[in-house]
Amino acid sequence: MAAQARESYFDNVKFLTIVLVACGHAWEPLTYGSRAVTALYLTVYAFHMPAFALVSGYFSRTFDMAPHRLKRLVTGVVVPYVVFEVAYTLFYRWAQDDPGYPISLLDPWYLMWFLAALFVWRLTTPLWLQLRHPVLVSLAVATGVSMWPGAGGDLALQRVLQFLPFFVAGLVLRPEHVARVRTWRVRWVALGVGAVALVAAYWVAPWFDAGWFYHRGAVQGRGVPGWVGLIATPALFVLALALTACFLAWVPGRRLWFTALGTGTVYAYLLHGFVIKSSRFWDWYDHPWLHGPLGEVAVTLAATALVTALCTEPVRRVFRCVVEPRMDWAFRGSGRARALPEQAGAPRERVTSRGG
Image 1 (cartoon, rainbow, N blue to C red):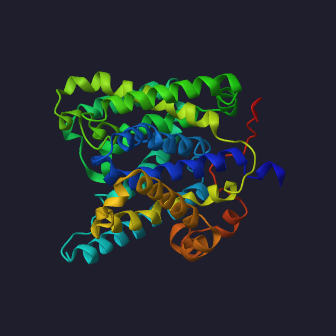
Image 2: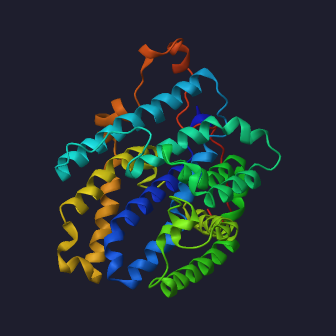
Image 3: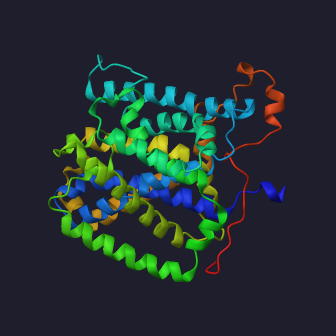
């Protein structure tokens, strides 16, 4: 049905976001010798995971604890989390020759924190949708957690709650909001904002701690007093939203060669970490030429090619059994659930723009 067809714009958003995620991971070893790469790295890290969380929130607006949606939460989030958390741990044991490294489902390793976050965020979606000012409340929660070292590390709770406002912002986002940022007037403003962000990132690159964008713990871990969280957390939230709006403004709305790949970004997210970690474990960046301009371009192209390949249908066919398992045998009324397609978590609305 046309009403259920995927809207090209958001598939483009998802694909380009996962490209930024992979490039950010690939650039990290290059930041130690290049101020320009560090500036790009800081700019991307200021908004790429917030954008990921915001889009996830947008497609979670209809989550209401209905049986078929709970099933989708289990098969699309919980099962991949368990499978890949174990797989990454076993990979680490093998690569580092450390057979005693523990498997802990409560301590997400590397990329897996985002699936833990998605589980918590989606379960609390009905609550956020009932509040009058959900974004402000979630930002207050994030700010409080950023000043509380004892918030706990189970399921990466510090990180989950500090990224929560972006997910909640996605819950309240509407197609007309997106359409507003995709006008040509806003696009020209976005170019200016992006340029200022890059210049600022280049200026602070020698001394700024990128850990501020990771939100892994309380601000005290950055060597500042706790009260700084009252300023830093809202400021980083506003910065990330502004850069996300700039990014959304320039994402094309028409169907392109990579549009269909946007439906498979979860595969690229879960799988590209094995390649990224391999590059660290086996010192792929030890070749000096990689740290020059041509090498930096090559790394960027390689990261882009990697996630492009991982989003393709052949890869999805191989890994669908663990990334999107059906598991009808585990649920009652699974036949009825199959009649209720829910790949994105929300109806597909058309987003229009004068800019095309």
